[in-house]
Length: 337
Image (cartoon, rainbow, N blue to C red):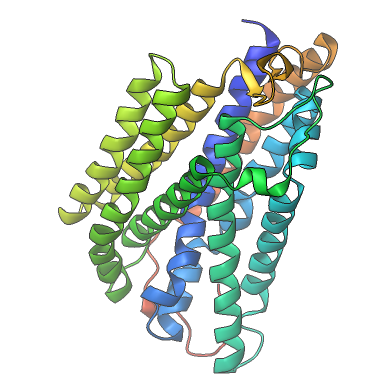
């Protein structure tokens, strides 16, 4: 297999890891104002992701770095053509991170309520805009003969991309509810389980429409299989939650997100950024790639360091594997533990 194809596959894997792991982080943040009835409930929710949320964001940094090094033309066009939405995502992620750290600094209801809103917005905005961004990557954008983006921000606000945004927003919210059912106990877990039923319908409808549109407009024969896995995963997660099989439910939402990402990247290949102006102007795994020597060096670096990162993150999840309950929240106010 050519190194260009290997790195396209690796970037797809990195984005899959990011969406699966950061997806439930976003979901918990989105649900914070709705499931947390008091400050203790909200601290239970925040503590459920407290040890892992910043580590999950590393997948985004590595995916961006890999794209920059392996496909510099792809990276350059994304950050020029998608500059405003990517800037909004970055600001939202910064606000969200600051909110996690500052929420417990003052023993004030108004102070905490304001940071809770920041956590909600900092989770919902990226969850929505990542779907919009990837919808446009798959649909294509205006590129000239020199592979330069020639469109505007409003070209990105098309029905297909907006449906992609609604899909990621609703699916991540469902993923977060399933995670809370698995990771917490007591009232928060019970309310999360009840919410899964409604969120399942909310997520399955736009996700099904988006995946069907993707398959009919851009898909290949084999991506019908990943599309079916994604749909069955979402439906199965709701069923498993009703049976109180929280571990299986979380596995199925993770599988649905992974299958959706595989559908998107599989439908995109061999392009990395199609041109809606002229197909000849599209960026592909060949014309957007770095030199073979660069890709070879990157491959050796990935072979050495990727297992180390995976082992460390797996160890982190193992250490913090216990459920979070109201009893584990100290009476005194302070930073979430």
